[in-house]
Amino acid sequence: MSTGDEPNGQTVQHTERDHAVEPFSAFTKKERWVIVSIAAVAGIFSPLTSNIYLPAIPTIALAFHTSVELINVSVTAYMVVQSTAPLLWGSIADRYGRRPSYLACMLVLLLACIGLALVPTSDYWLLLILRFLQAAGSASTIALGSGTIADIATREERGGFFGVFTFGVTIGPCIGPVIGGALSGSLGWRAIFWFLVIAVGSSFCFILLFLPETLRSIVGDGSVTPPKWYMPLLPVIGRRQRIASSQSTPPKKPVPNPFRLLANVDVIILFTLNAVVNAVFYAIAATLSSIFEKEYTFLSQTDIGLCYLAMGGGMAIGSPVTGRLLDLNYRTIKKQMEAKDNADPVTVNDEAFPIEYARLRTVPLYLCIFATCCAGYGWSLSKRVHLSIPLLLQFIIGFCTIGIMNTTQTLVVDLFPTQGSSISGVNNLFRSSIAAALVSVIDLIVRAIGIGWAFSLLAGVSFAALPLTFWEMKSGPRWRAKRKSKEANRPH
Image 1 (cartoon, rainbow, N blue to C red):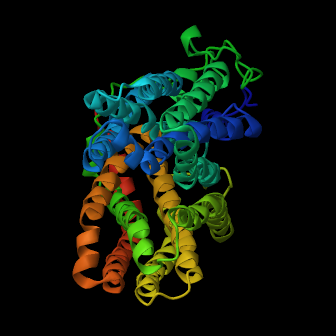
Image 2: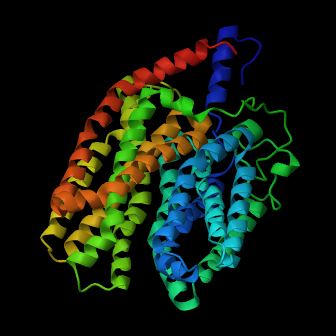
Image 3: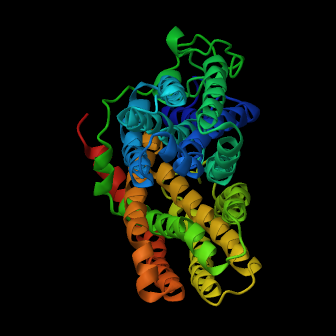
């Protein structure tokens, strides 16, 4: 502690150092893992509610006495809301808190699932509305999870947390079709929605009981006691750190316009890179069933459904692995800076840190492997090689996809940590729109030029995105410094 005998300048310097070494979050490491795990479970419902429905489409069409094409309209409606709802919920969560936003989303999802389980088969219009509401409730949980991680994690550990969080998100597409097909085939299509009622209801109760508020403008680093309506019913997470103190919290800001983020060149670059990889991934997933059915005629519908597990397995394994690699890369660059400049470890974690390079330096390798496997996947199907080859390539594609998407998502949150949910919502809209556009024409492309050339074209598009990573690593720090300087000079 400083004393009155110390010069004023020395006192200020020492006080700054004391402030710098304070932990970023008052939640313990175990508590933060619990919070991220709760967010990961909630995040499962965004892809799960979308994919679990697909195997039952023919059955639902028969039940509603309508065509498969009309039932597919409900899928389209779901995708439209899925791409836009996170913009609203993300901005609200960045202003009014994560916990109420989670509870509101899960409540809307729960009520929509109950309605779908009970919907009369004579009211097709009601099916559309309920699917609309189901998407509005489920789609935003991923954006909320990104904001939660930004609240409680430093740059040094953010990659690992995102790895665990996206592991939950990637489980949905893997198990959704399997669960949906099994329930629909054995208990009927309504069993799908009753299953979701039980799962969503359990998650809602768990959030209501245990999930603490993490938004820093409300609870600071987690030690500030929030208003009662922000408190979990069983406030055991962070209870020891929470004190009724006068600790200041950042002032609340108006609900931000998330589209203003698109005025930043580095954001556009990262979103584009994310969107290209995501679109190619969904093009592969969307054509899997029809291509496998045509090229491998010995496969049953059940067998084809199980083939989705290869790509999903690559994503599920790649998520925690690449998350830990992100943290390792960060620590490696930090140690290199300390050794080179003989820097104080406390001062390294500032705006001069090359966060763009630390995050993106493995992405060129991921992208090259991804594109190469994409082309190889197309030609292996065209030549009808042994089934194990395209499945292996699917696994690698899934691994690289989640590696690239984890990295870009972590970096955009690094760049805008106070708008973690908002920026995730815009990212979701950007990549979902590109993916939907490509999926709508991929069958036409395959029929026009053949399987091998179609996926070689997608591989070429992926390779074309490679310069974006080097551009961001080179120019990102300059753009970031310019943005910070502009913010500092902005009148308050």
